Length: 585
Image (cartoon, rainbow, N blue to C red; front, side, top):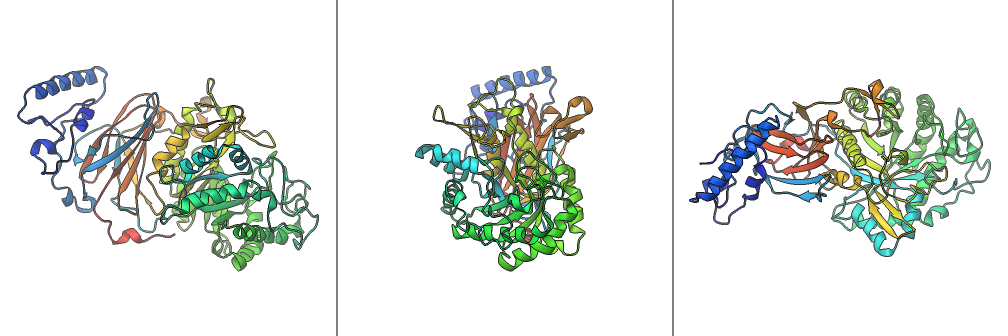
């Protein structure tokens, strides 16, 4: 009887597993096909196993202990009972052809001793009261829309289907800008008449956005809505009020304060008119943020705000206006980097009037991890919905040798690292920046060029998909709206303990945004889906193969994750208990 396979032989066992219509024999339950009553295959396995074991020891790697029989009492695991021991596996790995590749199914067995990296389920279900996940998405900018408009009809469909289609990433979130942003071809607003306090001249047809931006949103919205039970939720954000409302008299940059005192009410009413105008075009707005990057006096459109100024604007002007006209539209605060997100959340939620208007806190990734800040918000203000509203890679971060066709593999790893940290901290969604850019990383009216998941070369007519696409897909294709995070803990693995900022160096025990290396060790997140399946995503940004274990109560799964790779595991527990439906959103 063969009961053990050394590390490196698990794929042979997986290749021999299959379901049989007439029931399973003892040998087949252990994942062996064709071994019964044969001597030669057994001998070959024993010889191969011995060689692999010796090779593993020679490499100095710990090997798994003897594999035990597949459990027959999976329905007797108490709170951790399984409906099936079979686990689906999807993998993407560098230096291979594997891109969101379905692999041979894996199988849970009874737990075993193992001192290596382990993904431990702290609980069998999400904590009661946790927020429902809302999905993944990208930003509809004027730049993305103009690039999209120049594509062939076939390429346009490729963009729509690969992002929003059932067989694509399955995006259900989007973000767009109120007035222009840096990823517009120039400054623009929908009321350019100076001192138009009543907004008499507001362009209620938002003509500028109907040229490219709104048609792209409408096309994506249709793709999503063609799928049963799905809808596109759109977040809208202003980069700058019209120039005449600002103290510096221009949309780019910002005075301090930003708004002229008498413009607070007109600016609040401007939000209302813009939302109504989009709704008239069949584009309802799910949520807004008060201001994009309120701490950034950028070279492009900006508006500096302190937490106190934001509180005043929202509680006295914007909140009442929105509640009176668009009460169904949610409002998020902050919308800037994680290094100060807790400070802003505390300032907002400590005010008596603000919480009645605020749904949650939006944030960006440009100062690095900051997951501890999010966890502090989740602990102190559990009513706040956390939303990762922007991440992208600036083109200057491309390593030498990177091409438009290949992109940079590290960018996918950085996204996955950020997604895992954000989701474990309780984020209800994760939104990428531009859906699509051209070969120059634009168009951008201040030359603030960036990378994107999809990039088009207008000179050659080619469309390229960068590594971020596949890394995002390991989450977005398998964690739908309505899922909820389950607390897990990774043990027996290294973890980065330094700091992070927008741009810093290792010599200062610091790293810039998006960096993920072998020092981060095994990383993972887990979710319970509405269909009562559990999804685990595991990430390895290091060079070496990681042998690890997934432990779900009394059950365990032997796993191996190649260097620079990401995996998604899907398995089916018994029905969740009655507390599983207790949610905030």
